Length: 209
Image (cartoon, rainbow, N blue to C red; front, top):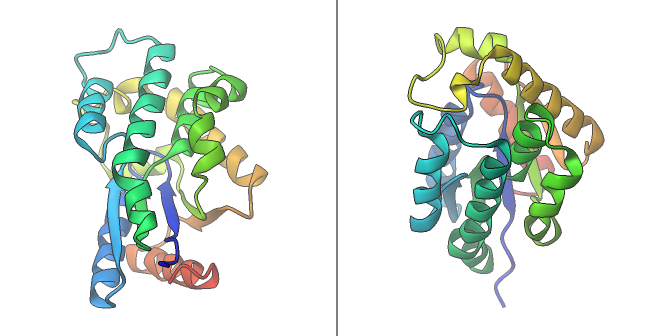
């Protein structure tokens, strides 16, 4: 019987450097012959990617906070069925760019919808698919947006304003403090190579590599 794979998620404020780290990790896993898949939220499959287009489109600025939260939860359930569960059953390492902690940071904390409501609508994911390790790249939104030279004008969430993104960061900080055994804080102020070295060290310590 194939040993079930590990589920690793990456989190952080917009512009924190996740994409760079995910690319570096992909290259590392491929070079070392480690079976894996990379996926993302929202997205990861046909239906989930269609929901992603709705969620992130700058044309949908009138979307209510509750609608946003429910769409993320719906996309997540489909994504788990389409991509995550099959790969875990095959014994693969599943690396996901954002997951349920994003909903907690962005919708529960930053949107003010509350931890209870977001946890309730994401109960399937939280009960059945809690990540083995969540890597939180710790970089403030001020530093992140300075690095990326402002918000993406086609991204609805990036256009939400600095005060919103400060609340997102506060949400991540609270989550990391509440679940230190799962959520590992990595200093995002370091160079990309230094951050990557920290990521690899952590994943080896957690028996994921």
